[in-house]
Image 1 (cartoon, helix red, strand yellow):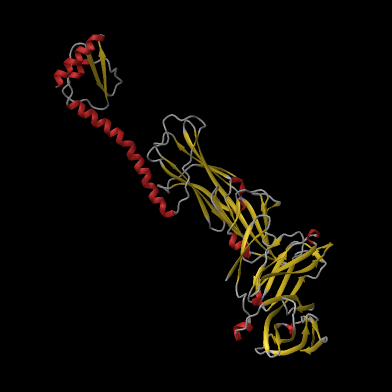
Image 2 (tube, helix red, strand yellow; image 1 turned 90 degrees about the vertical axis):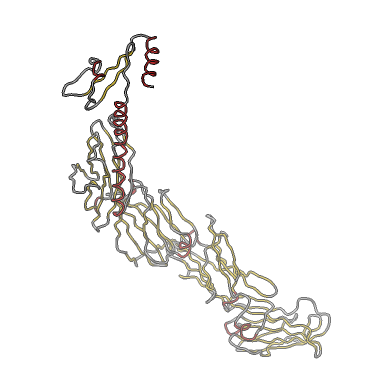
Amino acid sequence: MLLCNSTMGSHSLAFILICSGVCFSPFEADKGNVWNDVVMVREGTSVTLSCFDSPLTSSVMVIWNVMSAGKDTWSNLISANCNQRQTDRQNSAVFGGETFEICADASLSFNATASTQGLYSCVIKQGYKKLQERIVLLGLIKLSVTPTPPVTVDSTLRLTAQVSPPSVVAWGMWVSPSGEQLHTEISHATGSLLSKLPRITIKDSGVYTCRICVHGNSGTSVSEHRVNVTVNERTVFNFTDVTHGVPRSLATLSHSMVTLECPPVTGDYVLLYWEHPDSSGMELIFQFDRWRLSFTNQTKSNLYLINSTSLAAGNFSFLLRPAMNDGGLYLCEVFLDDKAFSQSNRLSVLNGNAKSSRTSLDLSCVYSELSQVKEVKWSHVQNPHRSLQTTAVLGRIKTSVALPVTPETAGQYTCTLYLNNGHKVEYMFTVTMADIGTTVSPGSTLPPAVTLLPAEDVSKASHVSTLSFLLFLIPMIAIAVGVLLWRQGYCITRGGVQQSLSHHSGEVENIYENPDDLRQQTPPQGSVYMDLKPTSEMDVYKELDRYNKLCG
């Protein structure tokens, strides 16, 4: 196996051509024959096979033998006496209906046809002694251009090279008139090299070259074969054979990946059109030509072709990470030779946000491509049967949570968008009591806790709300316990520091009015308030010292 790397096109896309079976042919496989060189010529042209690598220094006998394709034995073709590169006569012979000649330098000349393909052996003898033998494999190449030039504008031009025997091809490529390497597909089983020029223009006129690498024992050689292509700019090709796929309806959250499918065919190039949400009029936003290895992305940096490996094979699809305004109709068209295939993807994008005021937290959902939307609604995950008040206009639905948040109103709120085909997408916002303070700036926007959860995760999420509520109660319980501990071991001070204690009754009391409450034997009920009032600056320290002695 020989790996031939080639960097193709202005975008430096690398393709690997796997080249195998290049050093032997059916002749070698059957009889163990090995050739010294390979000569590649176009069918119908004249060819000369050389015999000597250096000038002759004495008189020798030159014998040419042939093993035709499909044969397994050698046949004598022609022979001649040669002396210092001179033959005693111009020898010619007819074999298989073709004429062969030995030239002055003992080389063999003839017209290359399908019947002349095979192995050729040149044997040099001096007397009865064999001095040298040289074996050459003659390979034929046939070039074709379809359709026959001049080619119609916008049609697909196919450049094909057919090599026989197929096993002699190591690698090959087609090159444009400007010298750019075209993506070339090689079939080692059939010996074909194919390249295409989709949507041909007048600029594509010129001479195209097929370069073929073959291997022989004498080394590696590259042969070049050329064809001329002309374009008729007065005629334009029109695609009439168009196949339409089943339309797809999609919905996704904004900034989440979604796949835009193309027709499942192996194509030459792909065009992607976009129709803005709830509008008419399409624009071309992406195109890719896998033969010229060129692509153009006109408008969207968040749009990608999937998988470069499948691109080389002509299988196309797109990934889109849509913003809110990227909904709409996406039409993918794939072209193969003179046929076209289309697939539409109608996309609705859902996005949510939350805004707070002094009295409420407003949760909103906006969505696009209304024509395929069946229903959009808000619901409370922990209490799905709870009725929520909503207001809706085209493309937007809103619900409100009263402030402050209570255990009943806390939890997860879900905005669900249902398509006509039954598909749905959800935007989720979690409201916790800890997130919303008692004082909220009017008109401020809260960061939404947005998640896209499957149904089985909703029950898990409800435990988060319960935990948040317990975390809120823990500080309140700690305060109450601290007050009870203080009441069990309080100390009464005298003199310069006064303590006042009061508890709630049905009336509003001044916490500084009842200093004698400190001496009550029954614990206070309800909330407890305490105030320390020093009578002078120095008395504070004296009373603190006495307090420490009494409590110690």
